[in-house]
Image: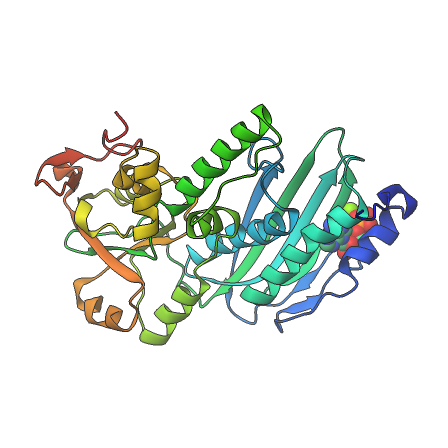
Length: 342
Ligand code: ADP
Ligand code: MG
């Protein structure tokens, strides 16, 4: 049997101490971390980028199929992804947690194991947070901080006509991983004796349970001297993010369906559920890839990074935001993905 230690046997301060005693600091900008009333950061002449995300059990995650360690990792990854989307380097996080007495010390340890694994992966420092109880469920508030050279941050606003529309990695897998886990949950609830069938689905399930933030791409931009003109991370699906860039930049675009990166695993998973893989990429979400625009002159600088795809180009606002399908049809992009779910 797994051990179960009641959190109440420690008390708040011993718990915080327990959760934070092995913190490793990766950044010189982390001057003062956990242990005082507030942390101190010095970004040495750089600009600071800050973001916060709130994650609520039953709304944003389901502990029936989300291991706490993965949840800890994902909490950090999705916040770091927002920092990357500003073209900044993530440096610190603060983590507030609230939990009911359903959660043991061992459960919180699992969660923090994932948090620290992500801190190590992205070289960010946990420098503070808050710990409290909730009447029901697990609530997580994560703040991420990053640094960027003065005025090198990238917003959703700067895309201009003639520029290239690019995306990192591949899309749609996370949505299919989630669809699969939801199906298995339903089967389990109807018959708890049935073992989950996730054969051959490690890629899609991995994408939803353990997403990665594209810090590597931000490093690549720096190394090759690319400054995207606009950027956003793909959390709600490609079409929704494209529309954000178009609306905020006051431009239109052409997106080619055949250029949207979707892996073979994702296609297979989509066909199993009778879904169109393109629709999953457009409307699925939770991919945490980066969508950005660059000047045509920067195109050659992309050649060293095979995980970046050029998927279209920016047009005048009057032309609207459109997708050219594999069959050659032209459809306006809508936030639901054109109409492929029909
Ligand atoms: P205060 O009452 O001044 O807010 P706390 O007792 O809440 O202080 O926190 C003490 C220290 O522990 C602070 O540095 C705070 O940022 C940090 N801390 C509290 N909870 C967490 C947590 N869950 N993870 C990381 N650091 C935490
Ligand atoms: Mg406090």
